[in-house]
Length: 142
Image (tube, rainbow, N blue to C red; front, side):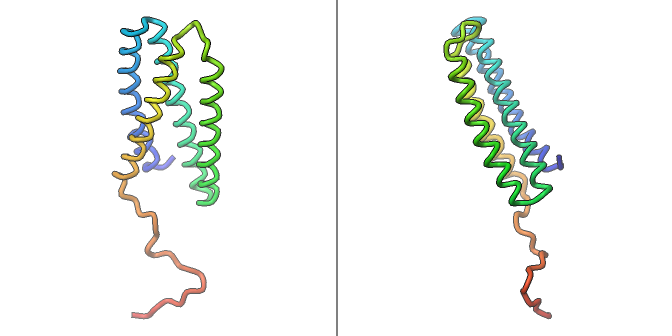
């Protein structure tokens, strides 16, 4: 991973972890130990899913912009499908609170997305290379 990727990861992971701690505390008060366990597992799922996705996109970016877009779309689709499967599979769980789990996954996803977007905005990285050579274009002499 490049330094920019690590900054974005940090920008998303820190607020998500803080939201996770708050979610675990609130779930513990509202639903007891099962609520805290559900919220804790929920925030771990969010962190793992989005970290893996970010790493996959960062790796693909080194290969090609086209591959990067495919990796971004593929990991997004995979995350949505896996989250849906997890939420459906554990809807009737008795070990932890499914409500705390699903609520924390939703809130954690929002926190990650906002943190990642904020990280991109603060990055100040050029997305167009001003010195790039365009094939077939005649360079002007100054």
